[in-house]
Image 1: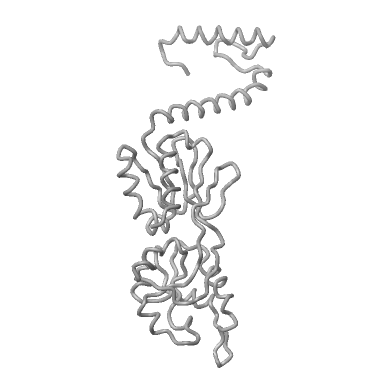
Image 2 (image 1 turned 135 degrees about the vertical axis):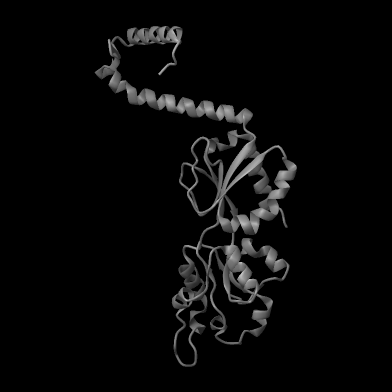
Length: 283
């Protein structure tokens, strides 16, 4: 509805509608004392016109964003945020002090609507409508504290300590089972009893976050099944060690996902370029 006092605007709109109706050759509105109502012809045109107006609104928003926005909204999982991004993000802030980075840390699906998330760092592939750039190709392996690793027996070592897990890890049991398939031939003891890894994971201590689970692992409280990108610093600093030789490619990789128009926001484009440079450069 037009604001009060905009009679001149109403007349201009009415004139344009009259011209449009003249060009079409039929009335779009029935006008009466109670206002205007769509005719059947107007009703048929309404969905298409509404769609075009919505696309125009999005295009105008993106054009405005390309010259005025000085912030970037990034959605990221807690694990990637705490173990990989947190140590590197100060570099971006130092390089671009006038850009605000708005982090949404969690497992929720990003909202890529205008005004929502610009970029998301996901595990796995995204919908075909989005641009998808693989960031890291991980391996999965088991780690422990150096002290625990030194105490492991030569056989059935996987039984020597709890298999740690955390609540955000949706496929903990499946991941442990997939890794354990590599050593299943060695999992039974002399008594012939097979090691039930699903039961072992179910009975293991449950932590609220990956960071808490990893800290417990550093303290020697059990084994953790991890992705290589999330423990590179711990391994380099010898806070954790790879306690078994078995390793497997991760089933899914971390990827940068965004709608194609997201990079019209110069802040998002800068963050994307910085992130890819960080991934490609050695620590």
